[in-house]
Image (tube, rainbow, N blue to C red; front, side):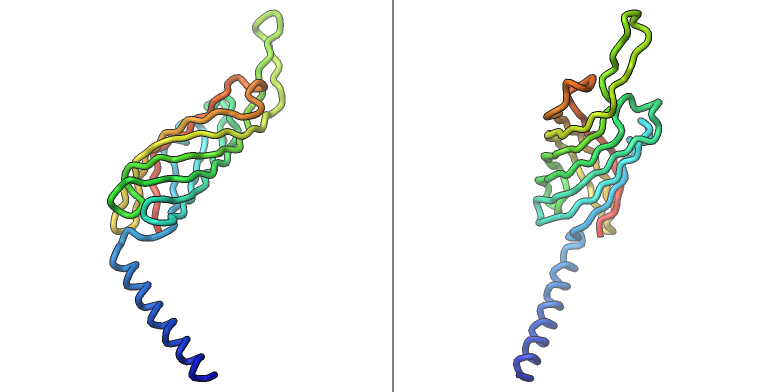
Length: 179
């Protein structure tokens, strides 16, 4: 029993050294990223993304967007958007990518104008799901800093008739760190 346990510990130690040297061989191969969208504050919002790399060409992530200044953003309150990305670059999870995303969103309801066309009432917040796709470009440095530009377009699935529009957009110029 002691010999088996000792053998397992030695094998685990060799595996740990091998796995560490393999990761050190590629400085870009880190599996977690956190990013902040620099364009979102221009529309009175904040957007933070977390991304987990599955392999060299694919990753999954989640994005949270929240409006803090409703005078700039017309009708969006917040959204949470999980996504899947496929990368075409030579470096680990970088370069040109395409993405598919879902989005849970809270949008102000449709504005209903009175007969005088000046005053209006607004329906309550509308919650909906959207599906969409997008594309973008990611640059990564050896130190782990990330610069990303992306653009996506999606369609509301269930309650589009209760809002002033039936589409959603995802766009950003983000900076972040890969760890």
